[in-house]
Image (cartoon, rainbow, N blue to C red; front, side, top):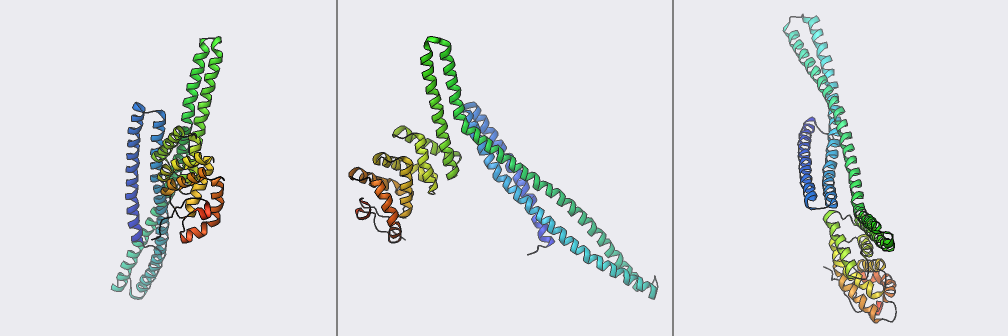
Length: 371
């Protein structure tokens, strides 16, 4: 539906208010980042400062996207306003021409000084004045459109710059542990070399350990970057997942990188941060008991839970049952389960029968009742 000039003026007022609010929010975000950066410099690390910058840029990008949208809408409103003004101007121009003709005809018929002619002259002059004002308004709107187009382009360019900077800061944050370990390894190697040639074998061995530590950290960061990309977890949520993966790497036979690989399958199954934090331990215990690799186990469990209408919170109980079956069966329960669950998933999901020895060689587990 076409808008009226009154509606467009109201939306322009709303646009101006939205721009003021956006500017204030940007200023507030800058102040918050300055405080966070100062705190990181005093008591944190380079990574803390980078994380603070990521948080700031992420928030500012959200605000900037709103600015781009508002600028685009205002540009469209101005274009509609110009069309309405031009339509009204054409109509007014027709009235002026008609008024002029009526005035001139009256002057010829009754004389310039007759009462009728004077009335028609006043009407003609009034409409001519309105036409002049209309022309001025059109010129102003055309100028406003040119400025608004520039505002749209500038806001889009600013958004692109923010997104590029965020990408660079995230890359720098991902490299930070590698650079830190590399610097430490280089320092250790240099110190040992200065002791003397007779300690060269020792220096070489320690340097080798340093390189291994750097590679392990880089691998872990790479796997966690994949978790972030798949799940969308950033900031505090990603920190929690990193901490959980490291915890599982320390307390199980699997590495932190392998735990991160398991999280990737969970994320692909639609699991949120809280789901992964709750479910990873049971899945890792199942992988250890069954002899399967962690990625495969994660894939099987998440696929099976989905098939039987269960949720992530059921993963611990589900994993315990599979682990018991794996330790008690003569056959490889995980392979048997994968084939049987896929064969029967439709029937089970529809009628909610228990998963039992009849179909999978396992103790019973019941999906939650409907309703």
